[in-house]
Length: 537
Image (cartoon, rainbow, N blue to C red):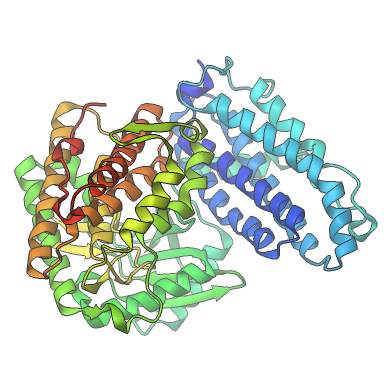
């Protein structure tokens, strides 16, 4: 079996994040930029997240221990890099920075190259695959080449060695085996999660929570793209009666979500769970909230009949509209306006290239726009977007993917989760994200692709109706930009080349069509062809 035929996505994303960590540290050294070095350190939360995801998939994989070795090598390497970055931060003098740059730039560049080779080797449909995944495979051999980091560093960092491949794996084998067995069962308990839950339960006024605080079990429900772990908390004697959900991650994000919960409780309390407690520890924090017994909307799409799903989607739209109408502000009252769609796309473009570098050099040939690179299209589209702003901003979820919407099918009740990006912004932010999160689903049979297209069309029509009620004449060109943003940036979460290509090409096409149209027409008259919501691939 070829590794790229069975490689879990989590392992590839782990290596991509590790490569980002190397690149940010290298950039910080080259430019003497503390912000870049700090960004390097933040990647460890994402890497730990992907290690947990990999662990949950091990039971279904052939030779699971070999896959686990790769994942844990990456995790240990990330921890070593984080330690190195912290030490680098302490070297404030320019002479010391220069010495560090000289000592570390070569091994960091080599590590970057080796990681790129590993990623290409493991990607689906890669022509660079090799047979087998064992301790002696080329994959592990290349990963061990990263021991180039075991170099003598300057005197200021005397005797500190950074090993990107785990040199002490054999000594930790027993601990690793135990960890694999826990992960394979879907239980990903980490010490900081336990402490967070115990602390939040101690603060709770609910008798049933404090009573069971001493005998708990945690079961991972999900891993967010922002590096957080979401776990269900239950008493050991009642595992099927959850006490709540704990979301643990970087302190800044969890703290931000806590403040957004408070806003939602004021604006639409029936749409969000209750908050039981908050706990912070160093740079990590945890939020303990009510457990909502519902099904994620992406799961409901695969289970419900088409009419039933579209009815549920209409209910989501109805609830969103209620919030928007009750919480609208004029643009003039905004002190810190949110980034426009093209600014968001520009900010995330390097992450797209990081996963799909082959998309980077392609030119665009359509209408009067010939031989134009994507960055040029984005720059032109940004100028146009400045002329298309809505008359008001509305309180939006901010990250309205299907997996952030829960449904209770019995009473058609809707709940929203993962609230940290909520705020006043263009309502098309939510619409565009929700539309493209349908298209991004890796369901390829004709029936599901038809339902996905119908769902996107229904959302488009809902947006048109709401825009008309708000005298928003520029909805169509602005939605085209929002969809283009989401289509293109979504590719960084999709490893399947065919699916990623379908997303990327649709985003590029929308930008090109809109810009070409706006050269000789009023952009308000632009319309999106709903055929792009369907296939083919």
